[in-house]
Image 1 (cartoon, rainbow, N blue to C red):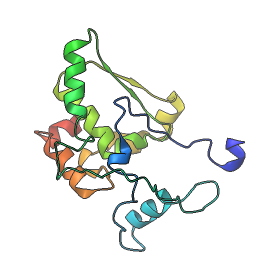
Image 2: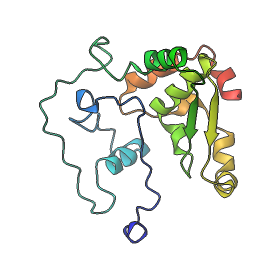
Image 3: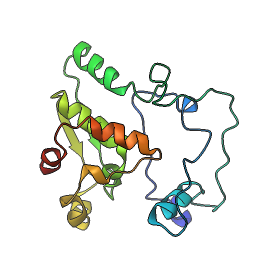
Image 4: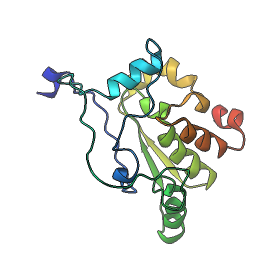
Length: 174
């Protein structure tokens, strides 16, 4: 059924830190980019169901939204503290980076933020790729990855994430 619907390669994000996304992102799609731009195409696609083509309904929850401008209440900025806590309290704690078949994980700012944070904390990291054939197929795009090219729905999130990397060029070289 998934293959017939064209969704067999749909990627799902599993947040191991269980962020309450109703307190941050469920009320909108982010700012609308200029029509005709590649950012608009990506934004438009995320606003619509890949099977039906219908626009996703916005959540009608009454949860108050908190962003980086309210750092104490915001939940999405707590993963660094949570990772540090788990690394300190859980023996053998490590990060497993499960990479999707097209390596799109590396274009997502928050995914990169978790990788950057684990790297900065000298946390053991393990990478799990979909297959050797996916590496071969996407080798050119992954061999030229640049962390500053990542995307986020909110520009201030990308800025905050990139500001945590002391030397972007050195990070890219790794």
